[in-house]
Amino acid sequence: MAEPASRKERIMREATRLYGSADPPSVNAIAQAAGVSRSTLYRIFPRRTTLLDALEIAPGPGTRQRVLEAALRLLASRSLADLSMDELASEAGVSRANLYRLFPGKSALFRAILLAYSPFEPVMALLARAADLPPDQVVPQVVLAAYQAVARRRGIVRTLLLEITSMAPETQQAFAETGARAFATFGGYLAAQMAAGRLRRIHPMLAVQSLVGAVVLHLLAEPVFSQAGVEAPGGEEAVMEFARLWLRGMRPEG
Image (cartoon, rainbow, N blue to C red):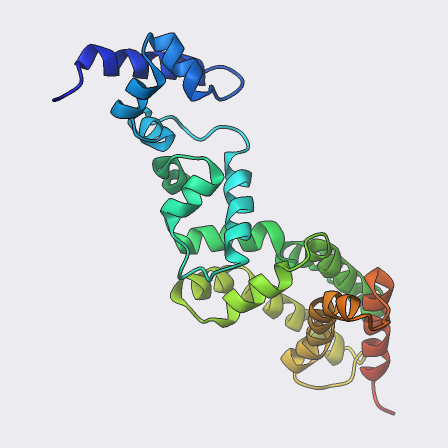
């Protein structure tokens, strides 16, 4: 038997009013304002997300960040390909409609994750400011910026690396728009420095890999060594030492 339209309309009207306040209302608050029981509300709208979808309420402040944080938690135990957008909406406490308003698909979601949590954007910004400076000044800054971008979140390097190297269509597009651009920009900077005689001449992308590879391996190994009781330097000083070693190895011959 269909619910009386007036009861459903009353719930939606009061929910719209309450969602216009500073804090999202509880289900109890919506039911009380609409003059119905909690069980009646759930009979008409089985989940909060069902109600939000019906209301078409725009994402509130902080919703985007909440979704990204929830996505990272879920990606710690599954791949992007296996991630359910419905599960993500539930984990983040947002409606399915609002999730898709923010991120139309997994490629858009992963691109946002890379922009928010990877070192690509900080490195690009640094290179834009320091493109004319010598490697002795720029390379340590690049390494430090990259390390600081990911060091606050243990495990994020592994998550991002696994997704990027999965070569799934969703991750390929997102990486092409972020990481590939950052690698190409850094390679271009190094090529210009080689042409100026400030660095040893090798293929610029090999030079990039020799530096990035050392830092990434350190970030992956640091928690493993710590748990295994293996004494090894860590933190910013460790990655700065990689930068110094790289600069010594890349000095021009002769």
